[in-house]
Length: 397
Image (cartoon, rainbow, N blue to C red):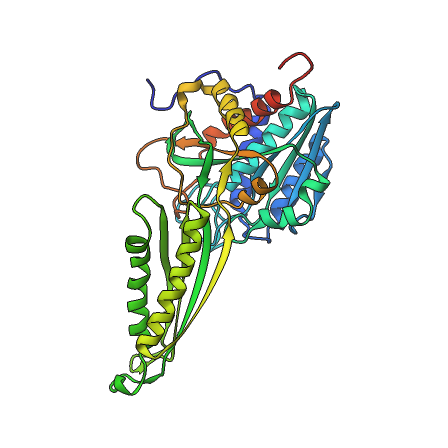
């Protein structure tokens, strides 16, 4: 079997395929991060308007939504994220980022292009009965644009019986899909810990309270929470990703700040880890005579696919590549997604589309990553197949 199986070719017209590549590369060259996606939103709105779809703008600031109705029937929402990351692109494609320090390192440029391609096809052919809501969501990376869209009335203004999302994965071969019912991606929290000791001369640390030493011991103690206080069969990850403190060589700083993330696959484990972190910080403060303040922020819920909608996503993907190439026995990912806020309001499913060409493909959030344009037709065709399946014309179910 080929490394990149190709079943029935997606029925996406050549001109739409070409436009998807053009949209994707234009957006890639002009990356915009959370709630600043003004140009990106304009590109999306103009493309939708050109198709004949009025574009609603303003949800979550830079969100764009368009509705396509073809007779009376049920409704579904299809969501793509549109924001970039604060990463300096090190690759050198012809459409390389023109904004230093920002790049599309997660493929949201491709997700946007695939949904626009599906919209173009569905406007042209209308192989369904009901309403499709095309949702282009800002600020997926860290800032919860999905939550803001929901809070600002996404499903009140654009009713949907179910909502669906999709993400490219370079570590899954092109031509395959992956999905599972239930927990698909982790709960995601952030924390900031401010350690306040007593500054002093580096030559006489006994006259102060060394916040750097406290921080080093606290980092190690935090790792013991998962390894020694959470069951071996329960998933949890505590990662300290930032340490800030000190200004010069010969001064013990008054304050050190730690920042990081917590990820779990279960709300009860999430509660246990937060409680354990608070207890650990309090104990470390008492031991050293320091003050330790923990700011623990609940950020994204877990992505939890509902059974019927997962089955629908599997069937749509299988109609393109065959059931054998849709993996359904995958493990949950410890990455996170604010699509979870939409799933809290409506049943739905989140699927992964393979984008890999080989073992050395750069992963997501890597400065050399680049979305694989070869999967644009398959992604658009998945959306089309899902719409046709879930909103069938009379007598076609």
